[in-house]
Length: 302
View 1 (cartoon, rainbow, N blue to C red):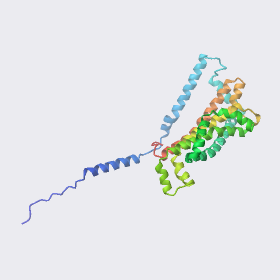
View 2: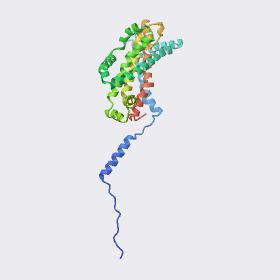
View 3: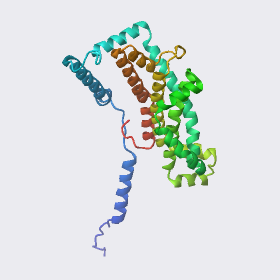
View 4: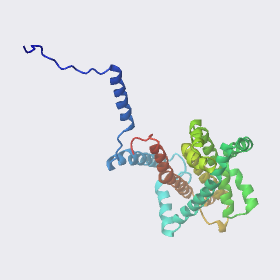
């Protein structure tokens, strides 16, 4: 006689702990796979171009209002149109780009030399205890010393030439680059260094493959600060050191405006110095910083 019992399929039960673990893994996967996308042209214009453009317009408006209100004499505060006339005059004479290029090529070449000297010096100070004890405080002191203080001795040592300019840049930028790298090395987790030694990375291999990549955020910050010191040191040297053999850079242009009692020329030099500093930051250091952040997963939107 056939059995009348009906078999019901058994449902496989999943432990609650397994469900929690699966949810945790899914959440971690979601964190690691954050979708990035390129900003559209409109978003770029609104978020990156419009704010500084608005700020510049507001500054010009306030500047013109102060001129109209005659808060001071016109020879002390020229109108924006007077400064623009200086720009047009320098452009027609073919000297505007010469002013800029004379200073930019000096600044970039001097910064390059500071980079070559400051990087190995920073590694040496960071990795050798005796060298840090001997040189570390000196580097910190040099970094706090105003760069203009180096101009008189550099003129006496080297004379009125480009070598003097580069010496002032080096003395201003090398401590910042070295200290930035030292700070980056100090923030490396010791586990990274032990793992590198375990894998056979010693000597220069350890410095190139382990130390430098791990210290990159601090190193980039030091480079950015080193460029700021290079540019400021160069301007101080160009303002103080005057010679026909040196040509006319932005610092000499600024001093010429003071000598000629031409505030419009002074404002022109100040604006060009500011524009070059902003351009170098936007073209070199901001992309470098974004690349470092993106390579570490710290920059969600590209």
